[in-house]
Each structure stands twice: as C-alpha cells, then as structure tokens.
Amino acid sequence: MTTGRGRWLIRDGALFDGVDGKVREGHSILVDQGRIAWVGPDADAPPAAAVIDAGGRTVMPGLVNAHVHLANDGSADLAAQVRDDSTATAAYRAVANALITLDAGITTVKDCGAADNVVIDLGRAVEAGVVPGPRIVAAGRVITMTGGHGYFMGVEADGVDAVRKAVRGELKKGAGFIKAMATGGVLTSGVKPTQTAFRRDELTAIVEEAHHAGRRVSTHAIGRDGIENAILAGVDTIEHGFHLDAELFALAIERGTYLVPTLSAVGCIVAQGAVGGIPSWIVDKAQSEVERSRAMFSAAVEAGMNIAAGTDAGTPLNPHDGLVEEMIQMVQIGLTPQRTLLSATREGALNAGLSEVTGTIEPGKAADVIVVDGDPLADITALRGIVLVAKDGSLHRSSLEVRKDRTGDLMEVTR
Image (tube, rainbow, N blue to C red):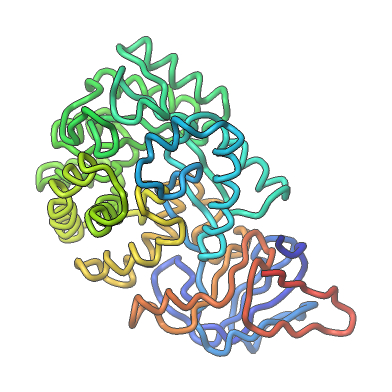
C-alpha cells in the first residue's frame, strides 16, 4: 500500500525536471494533494507538513516504460502462458507485476497487449486506489491478421472493414491506445519476424479509427516493408523497428513517428535462452535479429529519431523491473545519458499521450517523482540506486528520512 496524499516537500535536490534536460542544484519540490504545486530554489521553499531531505541526490520524474505486458511474467514461452492462464490467473500476474514495476521507480507504463481486458481493468483499479501500481495506458487485445503475430492475445481481422470493427471493439472496451501488428514476430510459432502482415490500406484504416477517437497507435514492426507501410499509414510509434534504415529514419522524423527499440526483447532471449528453457524456435529467431536491433538503434540515435524507452517486459526472461538495464544498454550503444533520461520521462509521456499529466516535474503535473543516489547524467548506472518512489503524490517507498512538523499529518512509508 502507498501513503495517502498530503502536502510535503522534497528539498536539496539536484533537479532533473525533464523539461529541458538540465540539472538545477539546490532545488525543492512542493507536493500538494497529488500534484506538483511549486518548484524552485531551496531558499524560497514554502512550508509543508513533511519534509524529505534529498541530500543533494538527483530528483527526477518517475520513469515511463513504453512497452510492457503486465499479464505476463517472463515465462519462457509467452504464448503458452497466455493460452493456459485463466482470466483470473492473468489478473493476479498483472497485479504482482504492477507492484514490481512501481517498486522499480516506473510510475507509468504502456501495456502493449493482453488476451482480454485484465490490464485495462487493472489500470482502473490502480486509478481508484484498489491496488498499488503505475499509471497504466493499456491497448487491450492487439489487432492482427488471421494467424498473425500475437494472434493468441489478439483480435484477428482481415480487410479494411474488419480492422475498423476490431479497433472500434477495443476502444469500446476502454483501450487507451491501439496496438497493431504490421509484421511477423519472434514469439509466434510459424511466423517469420520480417514478413509483412497488414497491408497499408488496413493500417491506414486502423490509424483513422484510433485517431478519430483521440487514441494513438503503436505498431509492432520488424521487417522493412511492414515498417514503411506503418509509417506511411500514419502510426504514432514503431515498436522494435529492427529493419529501419536511413530512408525510413528520414520518413519517420518528417512525420514525428516514435521508435520504442526494446533492446531487451531479443537480448534477454539470446542471453538466457539456452539455459532458460525458451523453445529453440524462439531462440533461433531472436538470434537472427539481435545484432540488427543494436545496429539499427545506433543508426537511429545518429539520425535523431524520436525515441521512447521500453523493454517489452513480460516476454521470455524479460523482467518488469528491467527498464534501467535497458537504459544502460541505450547509453552503451550511443545515446547520451541526457537523451536516455528524457526517453524514459518526457518522451515516454509524450509517446503514451500523457504529456499533460506526467513526464516532467512542473507545477500542475502529477507528482510522479523518484530520487536517485548518484548522478545518472554522469553515470547512467546510478539509476540502479533509486531510493525514493512517489506516484500521484503518494510516497510508495523511501529510504530517506521524513521529517514532520507538529501540525502535519504523519507520512507513512510502507515498502
């Protein structure tokens, strides 16, 4: 459980607010009723019922994981787990994974597919305070062609009219965005990762229906032709994008398309598959794409493509607390620490359609805040030392002392 909302202050922080990528030493943040009420120098800080001294540590927005599957827990065979789980079991997994996610400092996620409404419903439960967890924007079921990638957690549809109906059905159930499959993938038996799935006119219809409803569209796309179809159809995000090239980078940048690279998705399979019990046909497909995924990301960084950090958490041996490790990989391959932090804060929120709610530390935004024991701009691995997590103004966990005044309500930290 998390604490109730109140009026409290974090002082003496090295503030990375996510607005411009700069750090401001000796800054305070006032939180009031779940919102950021004030940000400024320590000397000007207003009174509060409770004060947390950051001791010069880095204070920054809560992290955003732009690609997760909360109903799955890293089982060696995701399709088998989806097939075998009852709705109740999938829901239990999702609740457990949501808590793991929040503990890791991830205060917002995009859930990119589940077999039914369990994650949409979990998002509502978190918002209502029934269970703790990150803010969840959930796609519900993916939209895929008959027998296409992810059919076991999707709506199978063929042709323009059918995909329109499929999108409308997921929107009716409460989908916060639409996830469509433009190509094959690694985790579906009998499907090649690079094969083209939906035609461009089908993808265009999906985008039209989602955008009419004010929802964004994320597209699983690995092969080049499928990626091109998706970008030209107007999708908002390319998930994975392993076969992006210079021509497609330019097209995506022109249209403002995001990339969520999910380096962990194939990386975890290749690193652990031989001993982790992952079916050999999954390992073989991941091995065929892992080097391309890293080379593509390096080229995407050089091209200046819009990037949001995401891990594909819940896929084989890919944990829900792994976003920091993904970010470390991103820096190792060539993204600057500053851009990497922004990819998991400001850009993650923009990608999720939540830029008015979270992603930066500004007055009026939700008080999604973490404190890091170190300077991740100097050493990205400092993110392994998150010592405080607050979401919507509720202090979820902290190893920092909370000082209370004589009139203020006690602040509880229960994790």
